[in-house]
Length: 138
Image (cartoon, rainbow, N blue to C red; front, side, top):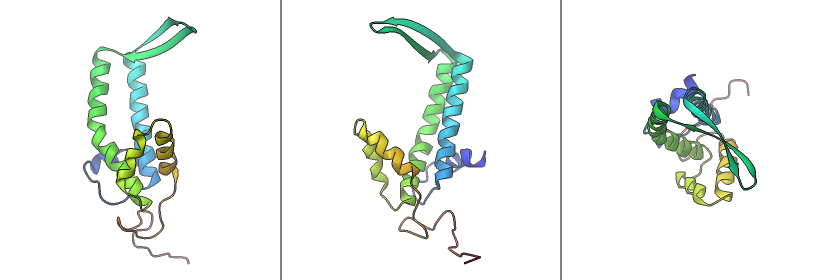
């Protein structure tokens, strides 16, 4: 749970580095909250489409308001943890703009978020896995 909440504690911190675990646990928390809100407040719909039937679910009432507040409160931490994740690979945070490229951009960012960070210190700070950069058993 600590890893899930760490981006909220580092709310507006765009400097430094973040591990993959911090990023993906934050994404997991976001998805879990949205699924729980959908289970509690969602309406399931089956509609007729030109190709057959379509299934959808949407939030209504209090669930929609809670979801909007959660997304609004999570926007800055999500942006910050994404920038720090790119910094961990010694890349610029501006690479998040790749997400604006249709189809390719989202896939490219997904791959970048899965890659391991650079070992040892880089221009954005010390290695978050080994901040003292001392190997005990080497």
